[in-house]
Image (cartoon, rainbow, N blue to C red; front, top):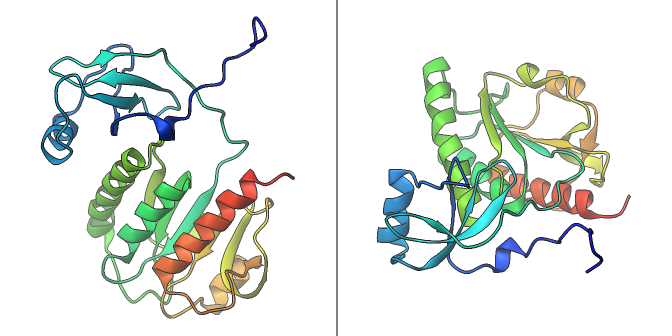
Amino acid sequence: MVPGAPMTPPDLRLQAGPHAFVDDLEAPVLADDDRHHLARALRLRDGDAFTLSDAQGRWRAARFGDTIEPTSELYTPRVAPYRLGLGVALTKAAKPEIAVQKATEIGIDDVVVFESERSVARWDQKKRLRNEARLQKVAREAAMQSRRVTIPTVRVLPDLVSLLPLAGMARADFGGVATDSSHRFVLVGPEGGWSERERSAVPEVVDLGPTVLRAETAAVVASSFLVTSRASPA
């Protein structure tokens, strides 16, 4: 290594043990729910290795126990050049939860669930707030599982208009262009498809492939395309 050159952090994906979030990496303290999950569900024992992140982009290795013992210095991986977002129209059953979970695992930074004009499911304000909290928890758990050093923002909005305007936004639909690095935020529609007003509001269209996808599958494909485009050379 050249003296004075910045050190390349080790690959977090290859570190031993599970991954968890704490508020302070200098004096790490696990939340009760996280400690219970690590000890009971993942069967972590005193002295076992695992990794910690502050959800702000930094991480370090540690040993599990009544008192968490840091075992490495603090690392800060390379920051992505820009944020990526996924908008998911409200759909029935557990589909929004699946979309948030998978988008987090893949590497999306901002996830928005919104009520489309043709959404089958409908949430009033109270239900939106309750489900927003639930989906934020889903994102946090998925970020731990996938060893992320940040947790995506998750919002639930009453309509598409509440999200506009946003640079680099496109909606997934047939006949569009392939996703590229100019696209920063992709919208996935509901079971009933986009209304004419929504098509006019977001004229840029990206095509997710040759087949008809379920909404939750489209969310996974759109997330993958976005992350791949960001990683590709300009």
